[in-house]
Length: 456
Ligand code: BES
Ligand code: MN
Ligand code: MN
Image (cartoon, rainbow, N blue to C red):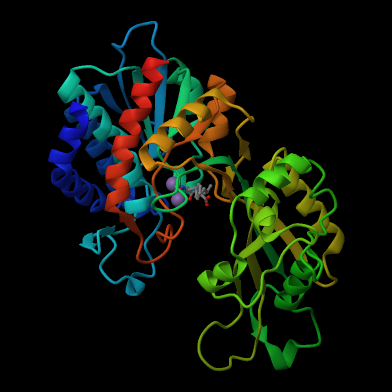
């Protein structure tokens, strides 16, 4: 295949381009990086044009922009494929924990180290490069291709639902592939068949108007930090069951076949504990660790603040205590229904002497699940099997990609995860990296995938 020769020959340039891309600090969560997210969008649009894609454009939303492009000359008898990815990244703090600076990427040990290298700049560059190789060598693509890259995935894609509805014609496709996604391990592919949904909130407990002297007022009025701890304690039983009335109501129970499919994929609990450093597994009773990670909803505190945070003692009765909470959801839970259930719980269990308020935070996603036997999943599995020499595991993931269900609702198409990151690449953490051999293998896999889609 001429495109493979092209990929081999141009690989060094591609790596340099990825470095250039990762240099742009396109942190969607931070207002001071708005212009950088825009700069990343412009970089992507220019790179698409250089690859031979047409109509590359940076398109406005109410927030961070979207980049679209296409190549639609394969013929009306050929399918149209939409390829998705995101060019925004998570904040890189704490900077001091990075071995090399997050936005001054370095190559060490065949890996590119930098914020966004794995999630998702390396991943989203891959299909662009595969398309370039095919266009430069064959002058055409085997299928019609549309590109759809966003700059707000890491904040929950708040402006994407109206964007997708307004641009449905431009995004119309027979199949969708997400270049944001994971492989199992170098040498072992996977197809991620389900992603969890997400709902984010902040629980705020208040008593006095301002912080007070704890000797003068302790015992006189309630302590919001204590009350928050009691409220949080009431959300779960000691053995890990969420005790919020209605929390599990909409969950579709795991069938025996689904449990068997999950058990089919190897899981080494000791290795998992070693990897995380935790002394024991913990979670909802009645399910295996793997089932809880992949297929059961969760409720977690992500942050806690109240009172004096500095060194030593400050004898203060805090006015306020706050907990950031997220729930990861599975089919067919709704973020809003779960929020309502927690709100009702908070109201019913609020300790005396304080007020409790539950505020929804931005960042929500519906759970996403591929139907069994999906056609595009089969083709993706075939391409992965050819490239890796091994059949992919069928897995699920606890992460969320909010736009997946938006695309399903508006275009009626389930997206297949076809990405080449790995779960040990420190996504969202210090020392994020991307494997350069996976970068290269992914390009071959995308070219194969497009060929197979065109041959079918
Ligand atoms: N790429 C991840 C999602 C992911 C992670 C999918 C692991 C499959 C396996 C994505 O960029 C992400 O981090 N999403 C956020 C969404 C949130 C901010 C609404 C997440 O899951 O926390
Ligand atoms: Mn991602
Ligand atoms: Mn992410």
